[in-house]
Image (tube, rainbow, N blue to C red; front, side):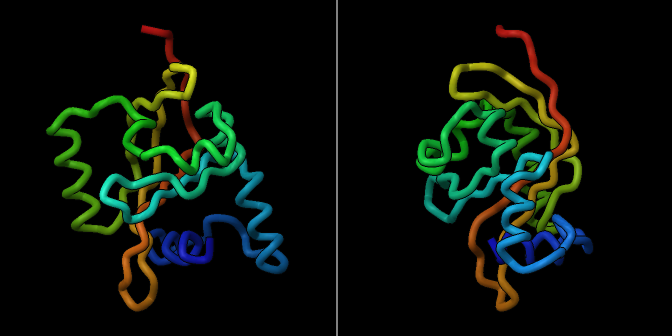
Length: 144
């Protein structure tokens, strides 16, 4: 989780959570945060490797199942134009501050996330570890 915290700090010039206490205290704050936090690795079809309690509740999954899920399966298929914009912004800036999109829980419930921050997980040496996202705002949607 250090790479998530450090990368967030570098991209957004602020801590993801206040650094109060030791590292375990910070990890507990991330786990129990009132925002959704998730990350995926560098596989050819990236798989989630973390989701905090808020994210797990939204996606209606247990940690062990969530961390086997390819991240692409958490979202509805996005349009090519939106995908192109997203990739261009991440390539240019290493992060996005205001991503919005529809996500789907394991039971098929749809929810709209707003003002999500998405960032590349890169260590100080430039090694890439995947991507992370956090969002505080979401709206439940009607079933199709």
